[in-house]
Each structure stands twice: as structure tokens, then as C-alpha cells.
Length: 293
Image (tube, rainbow, N blue to C red):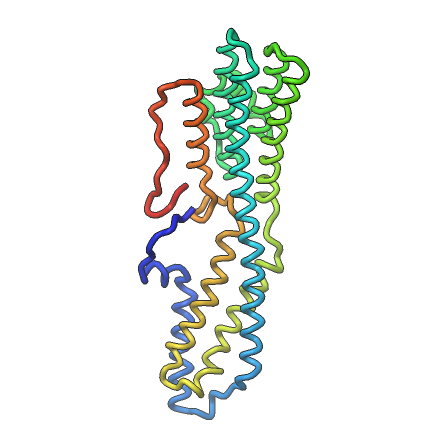
């Protein structure tokens, strides 16, 4: 996730990169052609303005849908934080004092679950994070399952049912928390596995680039030699809107525009270890070059 901050002009221009450079070059070609042969460059202004209005509305609607996906992903990730804390707290309250070893085991397993979920969503192997947190034989067994975090949570539930001396009401409390963890995971997997509709991904790019090609033809008769300035400026706005929607539509794609999975997983780990009274020596992650992973 890119953290708020001051952006320099070079970063802003580089954001749209090559398409903006090609547009500027096209604007110069059209302007030069008009200056030397005005009759060769004519284009009605009214249809172009209507086309531009439709493009802006389409891009705005598409970007709103993309941001809704990103924000839902962040909300579900926040739910994972809350329910992980609740899970550890419930274990501290409900398990008897002599079950300290079991409580420690389950909380460490929850930490393993959070890291496995982070890597599962980013389609990365979780084995380095699981080594030392889970038994070696379980890690080996997990290599053969399709959904590693789900398997970890399922095994934790089995351990609670078998080892913990909890009555039915206490088990129901813990089961509800684990159910909410599964619901949050399922929601994030739904966002990751459901691609942005083609109509939102392809058509805006096609229409925006077509409009940028037509833009200098409609402006050159009015702006003359200043056409590259006006056309490139408006084109930059449209291309930036197009790029923004593309960037945030997939919040688990392991890019700088993702939700901060790594930072949130570290925060959960620190909170749970603090609850155990462990001297873990960990610290919160800080942004690297303006990005919080």
C-alpha cells in the first residue's frame, strides 16, 4: 500500500509513463500538420465533447467499483486482526490455568495461520513462515493440501475439541470466533479469485485511448500551437484515472497497491505474543520507499 505523502512531478508523470509520452508525440504531429496544412485537420467539436463526458462517467463508475473491492479487502483484513485478538483472549479466559502449554500452542498456531493466509492470498509458498511454528510432520502434511491456512485452522479446532476441557457453551464461543475467521478468509479469497469483469477492464482502456487519439484533432483549431499542452494535460488526467482503477482492482496481487498484508500480519503476531508475555523483539513494519507491504 502506498502511504500518503508528497509526490514529486517526476513520479506523477512516470505513473502513466509510455502512453502519456506517445500521446504527447501524437499531439505534436497533429499540431505541426495543422500549422502547415490547416485544411487537412478538421474535426467537429461537439461529438468530441460528448464522447469525453461519457468517458469520464465510465471511468468514474469503474474506479468506484475497483475501490469498493480494495476497501472490502481492507475491511476483511481488519476483521482478521480483530478476531485473532479475540481468539487469543478467549483462550486466556476459557482455558484453565494448568492448560498454559495448550494455550501457547494454539496462539502460536494462530500466528502461523495469519502468515499462511498472507502468503496464500499472494500465491506465495508459506513453508519458511511455518517452519518453527508448526511441527515438522504437520508442515510436511500441509504440502499436500490445497488451502494451507484453512487446514491450519481446522487442525487448531480439532486440538481444542480434543485437548481443551471446555463445556459446550465455551466451545460455542470459540467456534463462533473461528467461524468469523473463516468468513473473513473466504471473503478475501473471493476477491482474489474473482477477476474484475472484462467490461470494466477492457472497454475503458479502449475508449480512453481512442478518445486521446481524437482529442488533438478536436482541439487544434482552437488552441493552435498550444494544442500539445492542452491535449496532453487532459490526456494525462484520463490515463491516470484509467491506471488508478487498474491498480486497485486486485488488492492481493502482490504489488505496491495491495492492502498491507505483511504489516498487518506482523501487527497480529506482536499482539498475540505480547498477550503471552513473550519477549519477541519484533517491531512494527515501516514504509519502504513510500510503500507499506
